[in-house]
Image (spheres, rainbow, N blue to C red):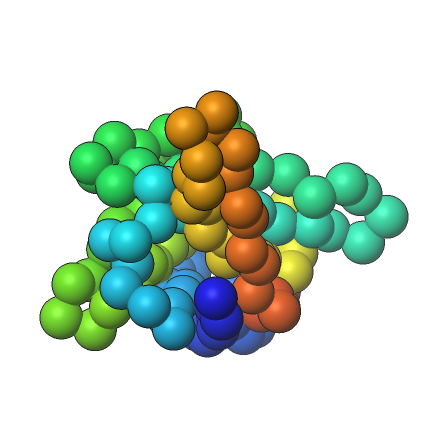
Length: 120
Protein backbone atom coordinates (compact mmCIF):
# COMPACT_ATOMS: atom_id res chain seq x y z
CA UNK A 1 0.00 0.00 0.00
CA UNK A 2 1.28 3.45 -0.89
CA UNK A 3 0.06 6.56 0.85
CA UNK A 4 1.07 9.99 -0.41
CA UNK A 5 0.38 13.15 1.55
CA UNK A 6 0.07 16.63 0.09
CA UNK A 7 -1.14 20.06 1.09
CA UNK A 8 1.39 21.01 3.74
CA UNK A 9 3.06 24.38 3.81
CA UNK A 10 3.66 27.60 5.68
CA UNK A 11 0.68 29.48 7.08
CA UNK A 12 0.15 32.27 9.59
CA UNK A 13 -1.50 31.63 12.92
CA UNK A 14 -5.26 31.65 12.51
CA UNK A 15 -5.03 30.39 8.96
CA UNK A 16 -6.20 27.16 7.37
CA UNK A 17 -4.77 24.26 5.42
CA UNK A 18 -6.20 21.06 4.02
CA UNK A 19 -4.00 17.97 3.91
CA UNK A 20 -4.76 15.13 1.53
CA UNK A 21 -3.71 11.50 1.58
CA UNK A 22 -3.92 9.60 -1.69
CA UNK A 23 -3.90 5.81 -1.49
CA UNK A 24 -2.84 3.21 -4.04
CA UNK A 25 -6.06 1.30 -3.40
CA UNK A 26 -9.58 2.31 -2.53
CA UNK A 27 -9.66 4.14 0.78
CA UNK A 28 -12.75 2.08 1.62
CA UNK A 29 -10.60 -1.06 1.64
CA UNK A 30 -9.08 0.09 4.93
CA UNK A 31 -10.65 -0.53 8.30
CA UNK A 32 -9.47 2.85 9.52
CA UNK A 33 -7.31 5.74 8.44
CA UNK A 34 -5.85 8.61 10.33
CA UNK A 35 -3.46 11.50 10.71
CA UNK A 36 -0.55 11.64 13.10
CA UNK A 37 1.97 14.42 13.61
CA UNK A 38 5.46 14.73 14.96
CA UNK A 39 7.02 17.97 16.10
CA UNK A 40 10.80 18.34 16.50
CA UNK A 41 12.00 16.62 19.65
CA UNK A 42 8.59 15.11 20.37
CA UNK A 43 6.97 11.75 19.88
CA UNK A 44 4.54 11.10 17.08
CA UNK A 45 0.99 11.76 18.27
CA UNK A 46 -2.45 10.92 17.03
CA UNK A 47 -4.38 13.81 15.51
CA UNK A 48 -7.54 12.27 14.08
CA UNK A 49 -8.95 8.98 12.84
CA UNK A 50 -11.83 7.86 10.66
CA UNK A 51 -13.16 4.33 10.48
CA UNK A 52 -14.45 2.56 7.42
CA UNK A 53 -17.95 3.30 8.68
CA UNK A 54 -17.19 7.00 8.99
CA UNK A 55 -16.79 7.36 12.76
CA UNK A 56 -14.23 9.96 13.72
CA UNK A 57 -12.05 10.71 16.72
CA UNK A 58 -9.84 13.69 17.47
CA UNK A 59 -7.07 14.62 19.83
CA UNK A 60 -8.31 17.08 22.44
CA UNK A 61 -5.84 19.65 21.17
CA UNK A 62 -7.50 19.82 17.73
CA UNK A 63 -11.18 19.25 18.53
CA UNK A 64 -13.34 21.93 17.02
CA UNK A 65 -10.55 23.12 14.71
CA UNK A 66 -9.68 20.08 12.57
CA UNK A 67 -11.99 17.90 10.51
CA UNK A 68 -11.08 14.52 9.04
CA UNK A 69 -13.07 13.44 6.02
CA UNK A 70 -12.94 11.26 2.92
CA UNK A 71 -13.44 12.22 -0.70
CA UNK A 72 -14.62 9.14 -2.57
CA UNK A 73 -14.40 10.82 -5.97
CA UNK A 74 -10.72 11.67 -5.45
CA UNK A 75 -10.02 8.55 -3.37
CA UNK A 76 -8.39 10.66 -0.70
CA UNK A 77 -8.56 10.97 3.04
CA UNK A 78 -8.22 14.58 4.13
CA UNK A 79 -7.64 16.80 7.14
CA UNK A 80 -9.10 20.27 7.14
CA UNK A 81 -7.22 22.40 9.66
CA UNK A 82 -8.69 25.72 10.75
CA UNK A 83 -7.56 28.27 13.33
CA UNK A 84 -4.03 26.96 13.14
CA UNK A 85 -1.66 27.66 16.00
CA UNK A 86 2.15 27.68 16.13
CA UNK A 87 1.96 24.54 18.28
CA UNK A 88 0.37 22.73 15.32
CA UNK A 89 3.73 22.93 13.55
CA UNK A 90 4.85 19.39 12.78
CA UNK A 91 5.32 16.79 10.09
CA UNK A 92 1.91 15.27 9.44
CA UNK A 93 1.65 11.61 8.51
CA UNK A 94 -1.19 9.69 6.95
CA UNK A 95 -1.73 6.14 8.09
CA UNK A 96 -4.06 3.32 7.09
CA UNK A 97 -5.01 0.17 9.01
CA UNK A 98 -6.29 -3.09 7.64
CA UNK A 99 -7.23 -6.15 9.68
CA UNK A 100 -5.50 -9.10 8.04
CA UNK A 101 -6.81 -12.14 9.93
CA UNK A 102 -9.60 -13.38 12.18
CA UNK A 103 -7.44 -12.74 15.25
CA UNK A 104 -7.61 -9.04 14.50
CA UNK A 105 -3.99 -8.53 13.52
CA UNK A 106 -3.69 -5.13 11.88
CA UNK A 107 -1.35 -4.12 9.09
CA UNK A 108 -0.49 -0.42 9.22
CA UNK A 109 0.85 1.64 6.35
CA UNK A 110 2.38 5.12 6.55
CA UNK A 111 2.92 7.96 4.17
CA UNK A 112 6.16 9.89 3.94
CA UNK A 113 4.83 12.94 5.76
CA UNK A 114 4.15 16.55 4.87
CA UNK A 115 5.47 19.58 6.75
CA UNK A 116 3.07 22.06 8.28
CA UNK A 117 4.58 25.23 9.69
CA UNK A 118 2.46 27.81 11.48
CA UNK A 119 4.08 31.18 12.08
CA UNK A 120 3.06 33.44 14.92
